[in-house]
Image 1 (tube, rainbow, N blue to C red):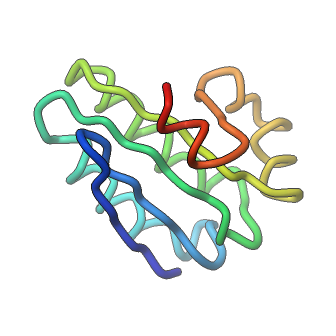
Image 2: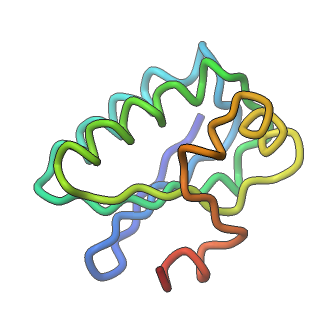
Length: 109
């Protein structure tokens, strides 16, 4: 998995590329935890480059969400495609996360 970061105003955009599953999620989760530890973190996770996922991979996102909320911040996900969206829907994570169809829309909120 490749991870890239970009800052737009107060928002840190984290883009992931590759698979998000039990094997690859630890590095991704560590970085999300570091970013979520900042004061009033504002994170946008762009999943447009994620080709496949498992529920276990999204647990790191949910752990980051808890930390972000504890720090009075915000976390959203954008550009979730096909099979990855199915995993989010099946696990019920879409009811807990703010999910936007594209990055530009997410940055407006």
